[in-house]
Length: 423
Image 1 (tube, rainbow, N blue to C red):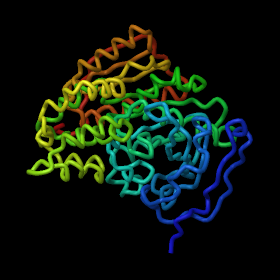
Image 2: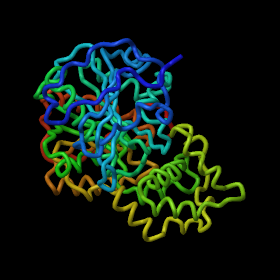
Image 3: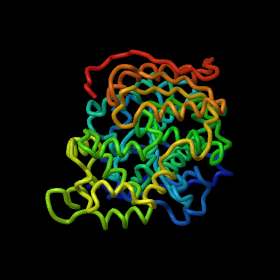
Image 4: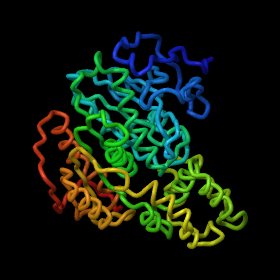
């Protein structure tokens, strides 16, 4: 019988004591992983609200075979204090992969686009799916580890799976880096470790919000670069692009339930608007609460999502709803990134038009951000994740080795195709 209380649970010292932390002693291999909804490890200890953002609250060696599956030296789950989208105390979990060999001076924070209000689809648990089904997530992490990089993968939506509460996603990403440094700097990571952010689609959203919030929320963190693929700068417009017969229609219920987890108005508004009878009803719409994003895309593919609402397309015109979405999802409203950026996107992206990415890049260029922006003439949103992967890897390698010589703002079209994807 597997004990639900893990033997490695323990509280850690405050931030002021973090530098004196000792290596975590080896213990018996943990047991079978448990979904976050059922695993008592995914709870904060007493008085956690009074800890500092980024302070480690719990740590354990990741259960199951995660270390061997990703060819890492060791893998840890870290539960840490953070701040939610309304600037109230929150917590989150990150997974740290330690390479088998490395120089302890490169940390990649890799934000996964899990895009769902189902907390059981959080990366720290979803990793236990068959690696071959994880596509680029698996190969990117393994590839980064093979280069000797430490890889930090936060559950950036937090314990409520608050997809599209992007202030909270940015905070959780920054605090995951703080937590890793607080626990591992000095004995696993050097004091001069270079740090980079990377994410595609929903992962690029968390990464970009971390980049723009860093100057105000975590000014002590030096982040050396951020690779942002499939950027979605304006989610008000993006949701309008997918609610009428799109393969990506599931983003509508995912976004609304993610926002509802931290915005009471959205929760009440959605409940009042969902139909209770007919083929497009609340029960079907609520299926999103128990689906990972790939399953959700297939489940809701090509549906007209406005059919679920009493007011139809007018649902998206409510002024209070529009204000919440604009404040919590539209990029460039909370700060200016202080690190070099590599932005890559398909010109024919179906989720968010290229003009929105052009606009945010132009704004940041005006603010003197160092940017390389590549607009791919080939493929759409899903294809560009593959088409841009190797370019992002090579750019990140320069950042993490300290050899990046990028200057100014460069915008260029490229034509690169390495996938047969029609999307």
